[in-house]
Amino acid sequence: MFAAAIPICGGADLTYVKKYAKKLPLWVNHGDADAVVPVKHSRELVAALQEAKANVTYTEYPGVNHNSWDNTFAQPTLLSWLFSFKR
Image (cartoon, rainbow, N blue to C red; front, top):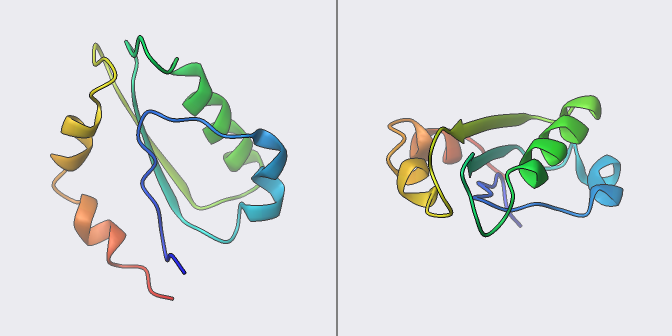
């Protein structure tokens, strides 16, 4: 259904990484000062995805709290990256 995804300040159940790692390119984004969802969740997810040889990109924003979507959607290549994938 989806060709790519852009998780922002999230995390995941790592038991599913190997099952889905090669099915969906991900660009994971998180602020390192997030007081709502600790950045360690995205770091652990990205590490597990990299280990599973997934197509993953990770951007961590220094000093940014939970509103890292502002930085994410300001990325000049975000939409071209997203729409470069087809199903």
